Length: 507
Image (tube, rainbow, N blue to C red; front, top):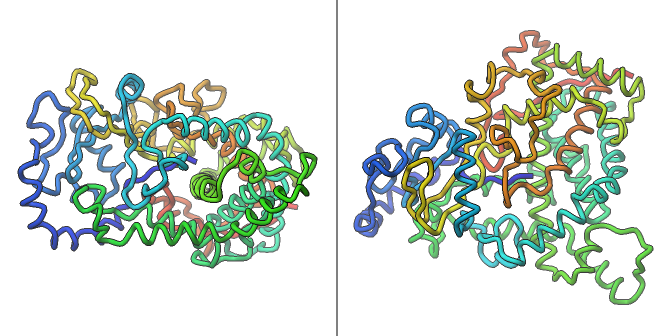
């Protein structure tokens, strides 16, 4: 559920024409403020030549996580780039990540927030709060205790199992037909969260159209807008002008999402105010928020962040995992052997049974190593200058940890580009933020609070897909090496092309 905002390479092109148009204004405004390029000052972490005005923005077309990884190979574990007017410091090793987190812990910091989405959110936001205020801490504590605590997760298990069973039945009806795995996983994760929050499904599994109406459309719009580069993020002088109209479009998408559950909030609030609601009634997270005195605006903001952070990333991870297993038959056979040994022939897997599937867990970890949901942890800026690894870090520098680079570092992992779940089998390396070479859900105060929820869901859904079906590529493709494994980088790391496969029921 980690959210990460930078930008997708193919979406950089729309901002180039406006940049050309505004270049004269930029030259006059920024020349007096232009600082030296990274590398000119020997105390600043080394980096590539920084172009006037643009900095290193033109080099980001290939994807920031890939570009930053290439820089690490050239300049070392801590390097720097200029993006517009901002200096970014990138750590690409466990040592650098540890030092960056130490800087976060001992210095005042603020979170880099996209200009298109921050207006009015500071008092209500879990993701977009720039500072760790008492309000933010209380909100995070509520989420962790009510939704993602051991007790909360256990109470939700029947909801996850029920919706996964629906997913399996849907795929059985699709036997022999081409299926878009991403769309099915996304719809299932949305409905699981919809039932936890509002006791309601929001998306039909039969809906195959990406840009369908309702919540599905709104969430896809928000993800797309989140990956669109905003001139104002790199040149704050343009913030008030919103030259690309991103603020208005983001607000429209947010309101579209709000409209999906506003009637539920209204009816539930009226029921409570009339005295018809009692503690013995069936309880969901909406009741918790109402009981805490949340306004409609607070409920809307928190809920849309939960849906945005907890659906696309989970669906994408399952899609990556299934793609890797289809390409690696040996790993697929091992999971099936484990399922047969620990669960038997039952088709409806229970969450309590998944804890015994150690090789499945290893496959999920290996997927997260190769395809972390957030390849770059969200930028944090320091409000005071400091020293990291003997380099001078100027105040207001944006500090980033490159998780993607560490997951593919040959000095940290043997044969890092290969899918080898065995490396995690009976290993103590975990995703709880303790081992700095493996941080798929982040680390520190801003670590994704929903990772226990996400992991339970990923394990259950992946186990059910493997237990119930054999999977075949379209057009009788037998050369599995031809399966397209390229990725798009945006809010999350998704496959460039959706995984299209044909299920065959094993029952």
